[in-house]
Image (cartoon, rainbow, N blue to C red; front, side):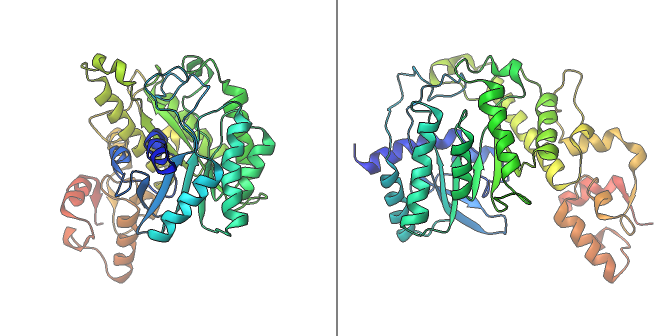
Length: 372
């Protein structure tokens, strides 16, 4: 196979990793439909607004690991195994960037041999781009589970962003996912190193990092995932967390007529909403509510669940409430809260026609608000 044919295979196989933090669709189900005019090109939303395109691929889909949730795991006969060299990846990226200006490159890999051997291919690619071709744009390198501190340090030096997927909330679930990898040594140890050496007040202040949970690969509850989520944001200075509903390999999909795949997708959607509440709305992870079995309500969004459980907090006065209070109101997000604050700095809000909310959002907020 030539390099383009291998890129097509490896880019398609990279779809299982969502930790592409330069942007995502607001609808998490769009993650798996983002491929644009080239199978390796993904449209993304930028933190500053607007859209861009990123090249996303694996360096290799050869893997010695046995992760139960991964279609690329060792021993899967249906996978067309191939790899790209660091020079090939750099050349393909730069050629595409000349034809269609790209936001950057997201590069991951299967564990071909040892973790550090796989990491070296990613590091060598980044080094070629940074040093040989003087590329100064966005580079996101995946940290391979079990990578040494020296390899992580080199990746941090070359990257704009790194990620390492935690996959499940704790050792007891990880044992059901992989016998090849060790949770504390291969996942938690490098995550802690990344957290200590990236971000503000470190030697790599501009490098961000993200992680991902696989939802429904084991018997974990939403409450356990959210508890880990809160700790990762509070203690490890995580920049972004992603969630991916477990997709059984093709040979097992005939078992899914019980609706379990749809339930996992709905859980993924609700977990993204909880993440948004924690990152953007000022909620703490321990404020979020679950049913008696530890799962989020699939019929109502988690902010609505919180509001319905706290009638003592309402009604909120739209003319006097601060931003954090406004953000607790169903239908009011950060943009709307900022618009309300701007409007009332000019004039007093007297009725709903004065409130900068769309009809649907105003209808949600109506019973939770007053004007005096």
